Image (cartoon, rainbow, N blue to C red; front, top):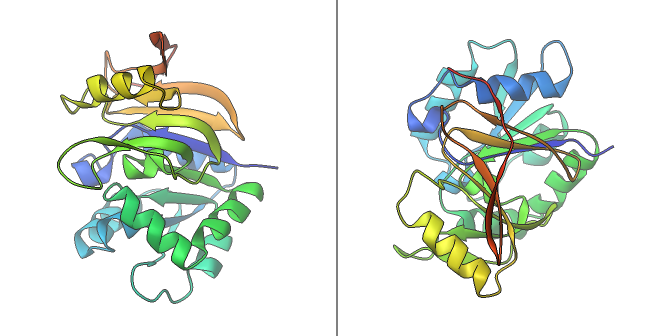
Length: 228
């Protein structure tokens, strides 16, 4: 009974969009009257600003919230995630986030939560982490391919496809040269998976899209538009 994954290209409350319908979609997918939402700010170094932005954006919604700190010495993130209906992963440094998670076996905790039906979501680092590979700037100012994602979803992913000038050319070049093919999402776009199956694409920006990207190029994915 694997849960849903919504891989978002960019936007959300850390980008100054506290009322994004993409966030509301997570509550619908949870399938309970008042979902419990747990935020993982690891990719930001558990920064206060990211926690404050999460609490400001989510506390007015019909849900309960919690923050699981995993940077440094974690306290009780396993129990927090086990109690979640939705887990939201912040953008930031993907490589650092994955290293911290693995050091504390938190990757296994997330896998168990997903297999129990929890909704997993996030943007940027919180998008590509669910895949086998992705395009990241975690190692410096230059974008590069990273092949050690969690692998819950096969292939690769690229966020900010229209939001950062070099994302598209770097990703398409990497895939053309042998990087795992996958999906890309513009800012304001969520790619929805039910278990490991692609279930649909939702956009909250007119003209923003998602794409399949392979060695032969990119193919747009049909989107059900949910406009702001």
